[in-house]
Length: 200
Image (cartoon, rainbow, N blue to C red; front, side, top):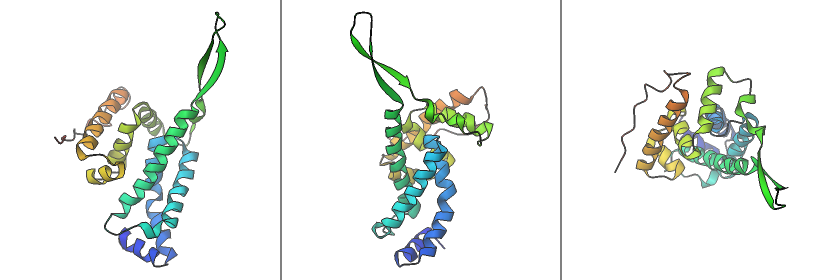
């Protein structure tokens, strides 16, 4: 049964259809959220929040949209919001005094979000995640959606709200940055990946 058929059944009151969708997408969404944030515990929370919003807002879904696109849009919005919060938390602002008795701020990194603390991930996943963490989030999101989640470009454009040309450009630039970061460790990882043609 298609995602859209299941969603229609859920809208009609069949909760089992919702449970099937949760089973169908939980692992994929977890990979997406982890690729974006690199924090297993927080990603589990966001995964639950994503499906909670699907449950609460089920009647706002219309079949003219693919269910997967609608679902990833919800998860992506939550992930971007969490990333902005996390980025603000990463720096503690501390008042200090220099030699001239002038106040200034010291920025102290908060290491609580370091992805390499998650020992359950494989070594390869750890290196890939660390490389993903080093590229700008705008590039990271589209690379994860395309190369890890295997979504189509039109879906990525709809999820991110970006023009198709921008999506393809960011994928290319993100892949290039990853290749530079990973070439000495896993030279085979993305050599097979061809650049996406950019639209004018």
